[in-house]
Image 1 (cartoon, rainbow, N blue to C red):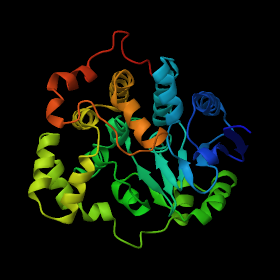
Image 2: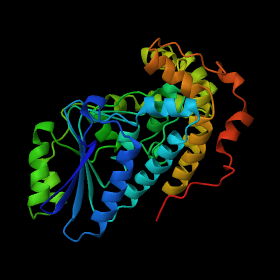
Image 3: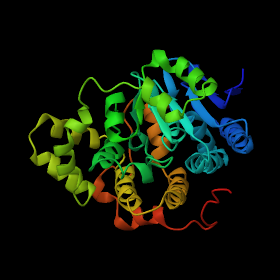
Image 4: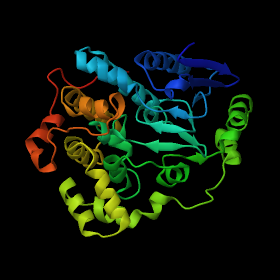
Length: 346
């Protein structure tokens, strides 16, 4: 069975991520296949739009195949770096794509799944959408363009999501601009048919199928405390601010932060602040620098061991305290690679 399926239907090209048992997690072969097919469709006059969706009802795409990245990195195999190199090229290709790109997101959308959806022109979320960037919990950083889109969320929402890995539902995604439309999952197949086989403008079709939120966004409702605490000048200052606040939100958020990799949090904090001032492609170049440094470090392998391999939920971070992660150490993650920056492709 192919891990990614491609179909031409009417005026549309349809990409189906087809690893439902693995929550449609991306592999390097899938990334290569998608890049090649998107390039071909960009030149195909019969294809006016591209739709991407996930097989099954549990996930759109849960991210990259973390176990494969862990095993290759531990063994010194170049697979992990090559995966990130081509994944970031795919993210850039989607951002640049000359035709409308429609992501149908239902179920889990995390990490790499965010990268193949959020950069498209239209992001259509179903009621089962669960969005998160949980990388600080496995000793990484929110990549796949997170450097660009997270700082552009309302207020300090992006910093909050980046550091805590907090999950967002469909209403949160719509309020934060991650989703452009909300369409019940039961209507996705009809929407695909109408987009591909109809002749009405895409905006009209999407607008007709979309529904309005029936409840308030939890994350939007927390904007005041999120902005207050996460606008601080450092991770330590964020934690101090939360510690002084006796609310349930503050205490729970502080506990969450204290479980994350200190190195990941400090690098992520700087990443989000710098990303607010950079264009998309410079953000992707920066992310490739960071990826190389994390793959050469300790915390990613320890985080994956604790949360995914052994599942003891007790990672031993090095360093284990924020105050032991120096400014110089953080800066080293951002420095130019000996081989130069990533070539993002034509």
